[in-house]
Image (tube, rainbow, N blue to C red; front, side):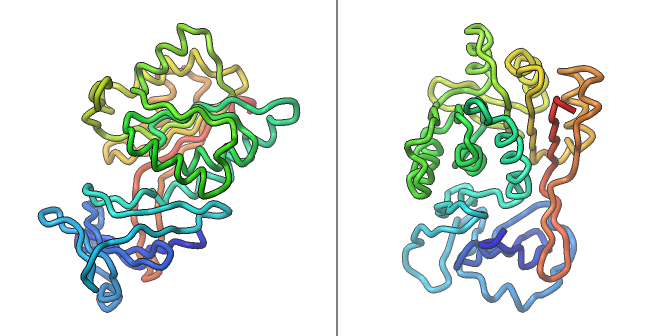
Length: 279
C-alpha cells in the first residue's frame, strides 16, 4: 500500500505511517519487544486510552489523507483511537476487483457490503464496475464513506448508502427476494448498536447472519469475510462458512491478516476468508 507503512510494533503498541502522518497507538496483540526504539520518536500523533490523542507539535489535530492503490482515503483521529482505515484490508482489494470485472460483461454486478465502515472496499468495488449496497449502523461512518466517494470522483456511481443494522437489513432483503453477486462483510467482535439498531456479538450473531446471507447469494457468487476477533482465526472463519453453506465452503481460501513492519516484525490483525463459488 503506497501511502501506508507499519514502522514497528511492540510493547503493546503499533507505530504506523499514514501518508504524511506517523501515529503511535495501542495494540494488545503487539506483545514482542520493540525492534527499533528510536523510530518511535518520529510519531506526530499519539493515542492514550485514558487521555485520548495528542499531537507532539501541540495544537489541533487536522484531518489528512492517504493513498490506497488508486484510491484516496480521508483520515482523522477518532475518540476510539482509530483513524478511519484498516490497512490490512488493502490486501483484499485486488481479489475483489477481479471478482467484479470478471462478472461485469453484461451488467453491473450487485454487491452487498456489510459493516462497511468508511468505504474502502465499497469504493474499490464501485470503481471496478459494481453496484454496491453499503450498509453500516453508524451514521457518521456512512457520512465519512460518502466524503471518500466524493474525494475519488465516485459520488455518482450506483452506491446505496444505508444506515442500518446488518442482520435486520439482510433479513428484510431475504423477504424481498433480493439476490447479490457478492457479499463482503467485516463484522466487529462486538458493537453497541445505535438508534434503531441492535447490539452485536460475533460469537452469537455471525453464524445466523451467514445463514441468512446464504439465501441472498447467487449460485456462482463470491464472499469475502474478514474479522479481527482473536478467537476466530482463519480456520474459525472458514468453519463459520461451513455452518452456513455446508461442505461446499471447503473451497474457501482462509488466511491471516498480517502486516510486516519496516523494523522486521509482524503484526497479526485477524483473518480473511475468500470464496469464489464458481470454482
